[in-house]
Length: 234
Image (tube, rainbow, N blue to C red; front, side, top):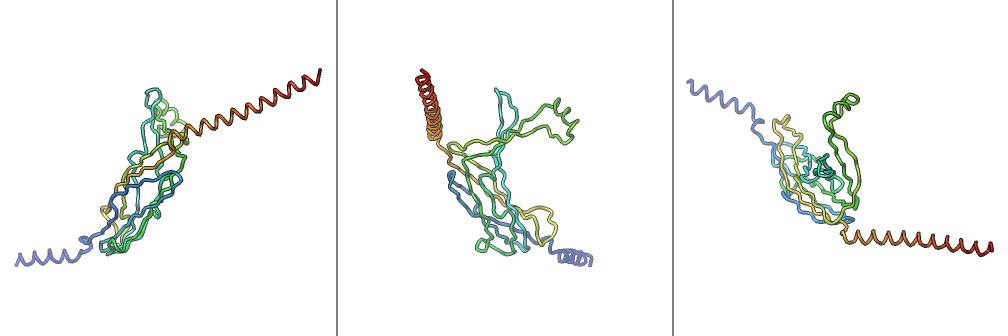
């Protein structure tokens, strides 16, 4: 009798909370993106998101860059880091999508990766300050974090590589509050061909020659006018 009662209680407990065992699913494709492009050559790729689970979801895409930050040195001393935003090279459209339940790859929701490489690359020199200076600055600005950034632009020369991981996470579901966030990921490896170093040197030499020619012409005319005035004065 006690065993039968125990089995009944367990069975009742299980059927009373079926949503706890129901899955919130998410899938994506492809699992790796290898992209090669060049400046001035817009390009696009497509990611797909599907939901094999029992509940509708909202999925958000993010990117974690592995090489968008590097150490900065001045005469061998580390002064901070150089940081660049991957969004100036590519963006996701849209960044958040609604995915109905029971959908597979054949009925997936697309997310477009827009690649728009430019000849100019914006970077930030993030300089870390010692604690002696931080203490003084926080007396004026309590929110000072111990570093400040200086934005600047450089040319994209030769080839640039961007690599990292794309993550698509279920940030909302009709299931309700989720204890864990279901997520899937993909690798991204992008090569962007910039200005060849040789071409850049030729362009600089042409500009210098043009400037020197203009200065020479201006100077020659001034010398000619000077001697012409001298002759007239005689």
